[in-house]
Length: 388
Image (cartoon, one colour):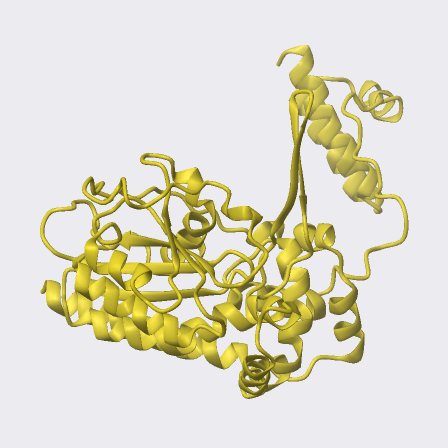
């Protein structure tokens, strides 16, 4: 046994020696030390008495013990975090007061102490408590955007969408549920987001036909709580076509129809983010090549899906971005739901605000989540049966 090995062994024996209380246990430890190191008994006793630790003990945590490190607080926090689809701590801080009134109906009543603690908890504390439960996601999909060339000169490029503050300016994109290959026909989700309020809508189409996409855009326009003022899309054929161009430009009040630069995904950064948080995180990268799935997905998208994301899932908005030397400093607003942003906007009609308020009164986020999970299970069961 080398010198370092002896020190490491001595440290374990010394820690056990300190914890023992009876004379018989201490005597047994000294005997074990003598046999292992081939020492005389008196030398072993002196070595234990004079031993100094060569590894520093962990310092004790300063201050009073945390009031949040209790199961009565961690459990409801974890449940809300999971049901809200794993948001960051800053968004979860805003979600908690929105979801707490419905918690007792789903999981049972919380103590007054727990409710007060959850309302007062800070984002860094949330990060510490949820650190063991964090789940990592990865994986990237395939790009299915085929640039249209005929209409490019007719549709202007717009790259400063983040400056819009009036509801009605939409970004749109398609999410391909193609799996590992883009061959054949499969389901696509047409994703929409309003830049000012972050209001989102999703619709499913079979393939990427111009008429099918236009029909879903018409349906989304009817469901929005404000009129469409501008429509910005990428360079895919499903958007750059004469059907959609005439639909927006040949009406009594024409809509501003713009496109992003080719091969510049950061031009449509708002919708690219929603493609991940509102579609990929839920449906993954499976191949949906069964047309029976389209009505099931649209039934989900037009009911619980839009209510859950627009009324109970807050998001943050970039207010300012500046470069100081080699650093880029970004300033964000406080997280708010699209519903809250729509109510705060002076450009949304009072009549539409009253409809939104009445709609919000009859909603429960936990029930919406449960209904969504049932419909998602039905979608994947239909997909599995089709594959068989």
